[in-house]
Image 1 (cartoon, rainbow over the protein chains, first blue to last red):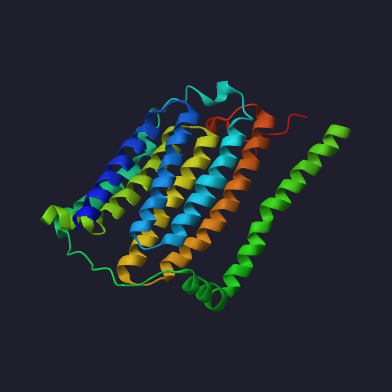
Image 2 (cartoon, rainbow over the protein chains, first blue to last red; image 1 turned 135 degrees about the vertical axis):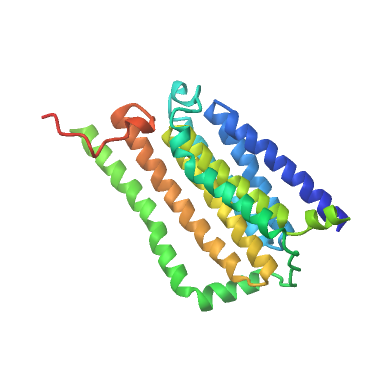
Length: 170
Length: 110
C-alpha cells in the first residue's frame, strides 16, 4: 500500500506541475508538449487501475497518433500565430462563472458531507479476452456504428482536398 | 497511516480527473484561439475518460472501460474533423482568433 500511495502522490504532483505549465505557457508548442506529457502520465495511471490495454491504447492512440498529428498541423501555421497567446482576462468574470460555481459546489458538498469511506476495489482483471467478449458479443452494434462514424474524417479529407484541386486548377 | 490510506485509494484519481477537466475548460475559456480550443476539448475528454475508468475499477464493472474504449475512437475522429475545419478557416480568414469567428453570421458583400 505504501508503494502505491507514494507512486500516486508523485504522479499527482507531476500532474499539478504540468497542468500549471500548460496553463501559463504562452507558446502553443510548449503548451502542447505539456499536454503530451499529461497524456502519457494518464496512460501510466491506467496501469494503477488494472486497465493495461487502455493504458497502451492511451499512449499509442493519443500520445502517439492524435497529438503528433496535431503537432504536424501546428507546423503548417506561421509562428506568429502560435506564440504570444495571452490569457484573456476581459471576459473572465462572466464566462468563468459556471466552472467556478461548479467547483465551489463540489467543495461545499465534500465539506458538508465529509469524505466517505473508500470503496474497496473488486478483483476484476480486464484482459484482452474479456474485451473481445464484450466487443463482439454485447457491443457489436456499437462497433459497427463506430466504424461508420470513423469513416467520416476520411470522407471529409477527400472532399476538402478535391475542392482544393478544383479551385487550384480553375 | 490515514493519509497513506487516502492516497492509496481512489481519491488521487478523482483529483487528477477534476484537474484535467478544469484545465481544459479554463484553457478553452481564457485563451481565445481555435487550435487551443480543440486541444482543450481533448483534455476534457481525457479527464472524463479517467473518471469512467476509476469508477469502473472501484465499482467492479468493466462496462466503464468499454465506454472509454468507444469514446476514444469517437474523440480521435472528431479531433481530425476539427483540425480540418480550423485549417480551412485559417485559409479563408488568415486568423485563428475565436473573437472573429462569425463566418456564418456575416452578410454577403456582393
